[in-house]
Image (cartoon, rainbow, N blue to C red; front, side, top):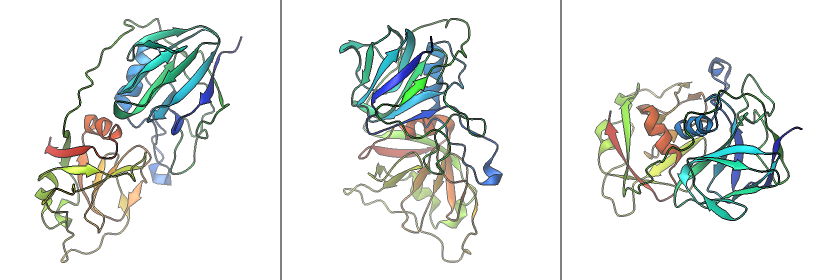
Length: 291
């Protein structure tokens, strides 16, 4: 019997994601993949999958699926209530679903994205070697809708060594993001202004990037382009790049970022900081720290 997940309600935005389609940036193809990769790989480990197996990435909860067949699943990422047949169950743990059981992910108390892994992985079609949905280029499976059926594969490892991995879901007033210097740091007048004070996440953020601005109650400056430096030609930008457009309001590039850009990259987030940035929601405050 073929096993699958039936999407009853995709919530705000849900997609299939794995670790992305690396190696095609020279052709203009973004890597895509899970925005918070540490949560994606943890979900896979909890059900005994290879870390690269495809999972469901949800955005701001309100996600609901029905099991077609007996399944082992795990939900990680944002701090949200997980229910099976309307009974609360723990997150960051393996959970058995009998055929017909329904699992839902509530609106997160903290964070933005959750990851639902199923033992065997999602067996959706590969595009350029990856099952990831890329919201910028449109490559990969379409975003999930009500009625989407996600077949479950058979790519699993030995039974997992642990079925739970409790996570600390603290709610800091300000999220620290570690950075390394970027290649175009000298293209802004005062690079240190990035690490001065705090920034606030805007509503116009998505899987492409997190847009930030100074809070209304802040007197700290934006970043100003130097007038004595030539305008940049379009050039490659890395995952986690902190790019400064003419507005002086930084953009933190996430999984679906373009492979090139014409604005200076003044810093690059560390891998763990990228994962934290992927969980930011509008109104969150962040502070940059040199790594």
